[in-house]
Length: 223
Length: 82
Image (cartoon, rainbow over all chains, first blue to last red; front, side, top):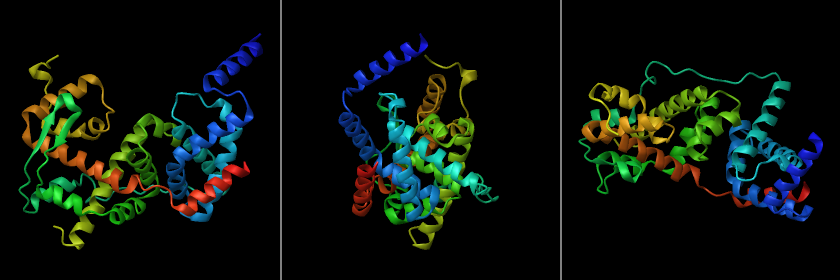
């Protein structure tokens, strides 16, 4: 009885997904993968720190995800689903190699560091953000102020380098939430850690990132 | 719904909710309390605005790069070989 119910639920899911043939199934899978490709590759690199290993992990992830594509629920976030598969594969592989994840703690100077407060104390007289509660919360004014100018000078390479130099567990959460746009809940499922852990690693990761960007801006005489 | 005077956030409390607010990971009641605080506090409004802009810059400059062409080719080959 239960088996029949499962079969009919599966057929219904296929209908919803519009799958009537293996070709359609494959096409749907490829479309989803290509849309998530950038996040997948970036996450693989963040996990492995190595282009060859990232390729291997990506390949294994695609195979595993394709085998299990019937279990993916249409209408949910495919990117979060396949990133979770990738993370699980990586964790299992690393467990076999008996390596422990690295999680560095913040030093006293990093704890509570705020780029904004540091900029204010270094002779800036920034002016002007306004709140527009009915338009999605706080928004910056259009006009430039000194903090804006510092932000604009922070180039792509500097930001990427700062993210890549974060301790691994912070880098993963910052990447998933800040770059890939996952919610805390989705990142929690991908990394198999509680939401509270995602929140604390994200906040700490951002704090370290701000410290690194401040150091860079200082070195470049932007400040 | 207005919050009661005793329910208003201090600057410190508002800033503790900064990232949850910017990430839209905050409950409706707390969101209202943060926005009521921001409506009254120019310093926190500036701080929140700066942090919003920093996160936007990070996503814009490091998050939307597109796949390098060699990776695109490898990805397509992987899909063919599944």
